[in-house]
Amino acid sequence: MSVRYRQPGVVLTDRRFTVPLDHAAPDGETIELYAREVVASDRADRDDLPWLVYLQGGPGFGANRFIGRPAWLGRALKEYRVLLLDQRGTGASTPANRQTLPLRGGPAEQADYLTHFRADAIVRDCETIRPQVTGGAPWTVLGQSFGGFCTVAYLSMAPEGLSTALITGGLPSLDAHADDVYRAAYPRIERKVAAHYARYPQDVERARRIADHLLTHDVVLPNGYRLTVEAFQSLGILLGGSEGSHRLHFLLEDAFVRTPGGPELSDAFQEEAQSLLSYAGHPLYALVHEAIYGQDARPTDWSAERVRAEFPQFDAAKALAGDGPLLFTGESVHPWMFECDPALRPLRETAELLAARTDWTPLYDPARLAANEVPAAAAVYHDDMYVDTAHALTTARAVRGLRTWVTDEFEHDGVRAGGPRVLDRLLALARDEV
Image 1 (cartoon, helix red, strand yellow):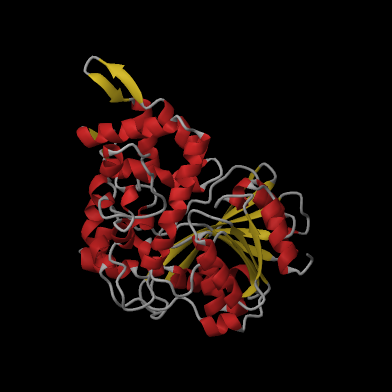
Image 2 (cartoon, helix red, strand yellow):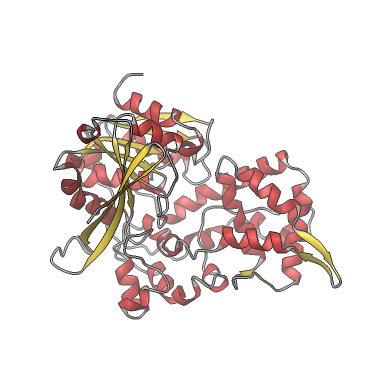
């Protein structure tokens, strides 16, 4: 059953689909997917427009919610009907979180269930619902970040379902282990932190003061999150976005207040930090983040945590013992998160089982990508904190006909921050107009 309603400039239709949990067992258990269809209200020919499906970043983020027409969406609606899909386990699709996963059984059953929440399953979901949406016609996919990983998997698994493939900040390595991903990531993160401190030099001392306070005090945020110095460092994830450096600066500048017992972290600081650190709204990100790199018999084994030890400059205690700056970290998941975050604590054993798993299946088909015939274009953000540029360009060369736009004008969120320009450019590349 679908529900139609209006917002400024658009007509929205909520749609629900039923898909197999395991596409290899189509007659088995099913889950529900939610999607929002969007068309421009001023297009009289809207029913004749081709389809574009948007795959957002993550993994594990959903809830494509907005009011009106964000710039990229407004550009897409000039030519397409757009389907905003809440990927399995996210948004209004069948949820997967600390409240619902115990319905599966214990940690082993939960971990088995979550193996079906990677890019390959999302592609199969798209192919299951596409005939119901388009009548069987291929559609354009726009993949942002992890959505781009899914798009490359789509080109590997079901290119017949695609008329065009557009990727923003999301070209994965076809064969890198998670260790390779993080060995490339930590130096990029260090450069982003250095750039932040160059922009806001006063933040060097502010960050050191907060870290020193956390090393000597037990701080529990209002929602029960235990704010350790490692958790504070992980706020560096902000530095991968267009406004992230400024947001981090504003968070740091008013961190302390004077109290009868001495300086304490302010309620305002704690409230903002809590909203940034909690995984209550997107627990799948923490649970399957490293699993998106699993493609063989090697476990991911908390890769980001292990590889971080190879970069001692990120050790807060060592930084505070000297006179160097405290380094923030970036897009990575660590075992301590399942101790600090009350939304993740019940899932710690499930996460351990996923980290130890050794039966991951390949997500990409190099031979099929080398023979690709789908018009494809990708925006590669130079020195993107979340996706390694060298890995992205190696993959771009491996996909026949894929055209790239390499730019340092945007950060990882360029498709949103850049207005219509990014989508304009990708469409022109895919159509061989530039």
